[in-house]
Image (cartoon, rainbow, N blue to C red; front, side):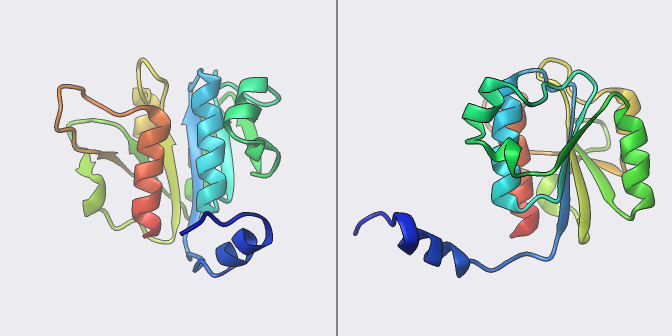
Length: 168
């Protein structure tokens, strides 16, 4: 068995079925450019329609975002806004269901949700998560079960797990 490279790899990837979910990522106050770069790479892998970088989220051009994201910040459509709540309201008006990946008293297990076909996944900053006011602008909150002593996964890992689940 050998890895595919070049044209054989491109031909193989063309056979991968496309999903019918219109997916948006909103990153609220994600300050670490490594997390943002990773989110861009995940967004590209998942066919994300748009990334919204809100509040004090690190934005391109930034060398770490570009390097970690393997230049996907140049391929994935993105925009920056100071006001994540307004962006979520606008996405809601466009028919997106907005889910924060955050532990709240009302959070549902990420595998037990009917996402629909227009979805915005929201993640928050590394230290304080999704702010309460942003949570209030979401349609629901999701959690990923933790078996160890940690309360949560890294921001971009949580985003990847949830996105791949809902696309699967």
